[in-house]
Image 1: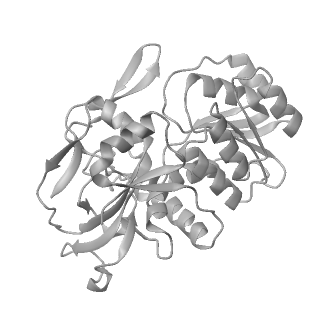
Image 2 (image 1 turned 180 degrees about the horizontal axis):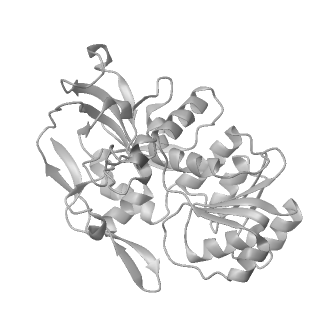
Length: 352
């Protein structure tokens, strides 16, 4: 079958031919019809994360070695199952979203349902072949999520951008009806976060983005206020409007966005970093104590959270965000557009 893989880091992905997957044991095979294009795919293509100060975290050092068939936002038809897969033949032909953030499946972290935090990750599209292909092998049907009634192009994005935003929002403990939430970065994940936050009942949402078009999109999507974090009066504007930001979620994860987000939150506020743009920050320890602020990271999400999110979507509580379908053969062009910031919402690769 055809697939699109990183054969060499820092090079365009290449079309390759690989054997069709044949399921064994509990494995199942999904015939891919949609696969989201995520910013994490750019890091996988580049082969490293920027740690700041001239330091890099090599993906090869984390067990990611080419060729890597990209794609972790996988949606498609179930077409085959292994002899031990606990799923009936009546499920064959049905469409499912795949939870991609897998672990070893055996450690205590995995057993308690937090495979995304496993020390031995086995994620689809990262450590094992993903959805930039005709078919995708999934180790167990428990990772298949029913998305009946949801537009399939939109549904694909919930496996990462939606789930990542939802998991980060669940880490925020503020009064949703009166406290203020700040979203940093209105790219695909940030915009998804805005829509999900509204669905969860956050009423006062501020956004910060350097792109005026994205600020306008955020306001049109229900944000209460939008600022350019580079403006000298941006923090004062937020303070005047909110009286103090209760929590900030950083979907950029750069030095500048972190500094802005941490400065924006009030005493005992929470800053959650999600984005992996890269860089570092310097913190004053006395101020960390005196302000009593909470700083934490949030990495994708777990299967239970994905199911919760999909249920919210099915209930009509999360409004659809802009998505654009692109032929899978144009995967490199899609990645280039994402790298250039030339995307409104999300791009999703599509197979007929």
